[in-house]
Amino acid sequence: MRKPVIAGNWKLFKTKDEALALITELASKVKGVTQVEIIVAPVFTVLPTVKTALSGTDIALSAQDVFWEEEGAFTGEVSPRMLLDAGCSHTIIGHSERRQYFSETDETVNKKMKASLKGGLIPIMCIGETLDEREGGKTFEVLERQIRGGLADLPAEVVKPVIVAYEPVWAIGTGKVATEGQAQEAHAFIRGVLADIFGRGTADATRILYGGSVKPDNAKGLMACADIDGALVGGASLKGDTFASIVRYNE
Ligand code: PGA
Image (cartoon, rainbow, N blue to C red; front, side):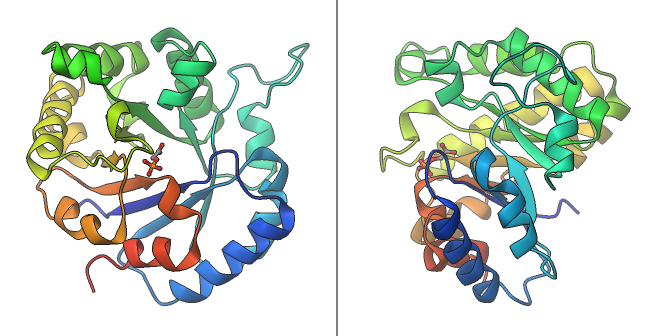
């Protein structure tokens, strides 16, 4: 009942030519896949180029971040309206790298969530604990704070399209994937918090993706967990064949 989502976060990689080569290869390798929603998130500068290359495919386009104002004197920022104009249907919000290097907080995540949903962009909201927090027994406390903070003051009917990505910070780009047990436990907890805030119906309909060193050889096991509805893939999304293998995890 929850359609799986496999999203590729290209981070700060790929110039125009490289992006075109990647998307062309990917599109041909995932041709005919209908049971999985596929999303790619390139850097801002190549969004329109990738959008053009995606025509005739079912692959959706996402940004990696967004600002909360529609327009104005905000040098360097990009608004939901501009992302829609560039062809995006989705945007990542609150990625741990933005929290770590660019002072993103639950409050700024919340502003971005509100502006995106108001503007008609589907947010992929990232949450996840650091290694210190996990080892200090704080995982659930951190996840709950990030969910409640990021989704504050949003009614259930507005939150419905939101995709949540659970990305333990210690698993991102490290090759240290969470075990299926660790990931499922966190996902079930996240769904429970969503149910507590928005009701069972919304919680059961929300796709919760796992992110952190997802590769072709661990995707299937993770995806088999009851509360894991997809993957947010970094490193392995930069090659057409590996990302396509993850998309085709079930074949
Ligand atoms: P990774 O990144 O797959 O390279 O660990 C995941 C992410 O940061 O979204």
